[in-house]
Length: 337
Image 1 (cartoon, one colour):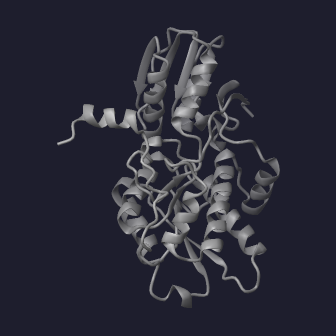
Image 2 (image 1 turned 120 degrees about the horizontal axis):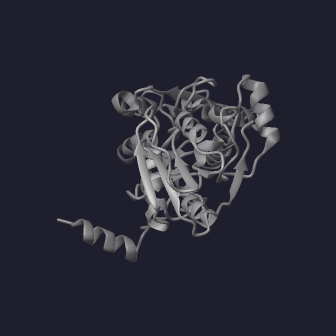
């Protein structure tokens, strides 16, 4: 039996096994009659509602990228068609939704989920059904630690974000306020390894943590809880937040400016186009979803509708650990407006 100590020792010596670069036998075909379909099926494990609180912005980015790809395609190319499957209780019905994307909808590849927890669910299915899974927005690097060569992640990872927060702290003592959701816990774990907090309070929303003892405060929480926590902090506190501060759900609800790791260089023209198309607000997660989906569709066009061939194209565009090669990000101010 492999003990935890042995596993960690192996990880320290060789943190990533580059199984994505190894040639594979063709994966399970999307369906025997895929060539007879008048479209190329692509799956999205997320809601198909632009106004969905948690995943609407991600859907907007995915759908807009698909529409733009279809508009650029030649007459001889089949159009892409997006199939969406979702459950607001993903732990109960999420895995079966991903299975239906792979089996019933015969998706060549799947985009999703909309956060770290739903991405882990999709990963478990991809590991067995053998289809490319493109994770557009999750920063949780444990999704890539299982060495599943079919999953690829676009957003900066938690270790990159934690380094930016650590550098922004500048060695100052700080209080860590971390919600108990999956994404916040993972980022808090990585940050704590890099910069031990002087004080830490974990809390489960809608409950809120006690007032911090330190002047510098790091808040890691989902958007609604993050806004509530920030509004209760002393006005002279120096506040650094996690990436959810960039969510459209925080726009107009933050009580003050905060600092947060920048996930991407803003593309205002893309956000304006998406907002005009869907009549809903966009954010950086829309942009991440758009850019990652555009890359996936490019790989499908060049490789053809074969899951293994698409996986090979994606592998050449990502680091051996399956994440986009991003060495660093910086802290930027998030405006309340």
